[in-house]
Length: 154
Image (spheres, one colour):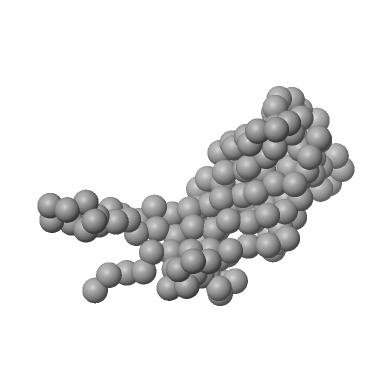
């Protein structure tokens, strides 16, 4: 990382940023071009879980090339400057991870993933899922994770 003062090295802090975020951006390869899609998600250890309609470009990309990149961020605020644009900045926390995606076929694992997602947004884990056969569940196993933040001024 070019700016060491912005690096987040503490895994607990990276997990906190991930767990507090509402949206994950999943980066995929569509032939020779990148494809990025925003998704709701949940985290369980080094695994990120997402759900999807069982067709479409996202799943086609995963089937062809399961190597993915994820980006998660918290935009905190704009720091305004006087008259020069050099005085303007932003406060944020962000995480980027690389890993391997898989489309989960096992119904028990699909249910586990959906519980992780629903638990994140609802705080509950007592859900019943009647749509397992009509919902695709994606698991990303993370290989690496880095983070960065804008240091607080003053």
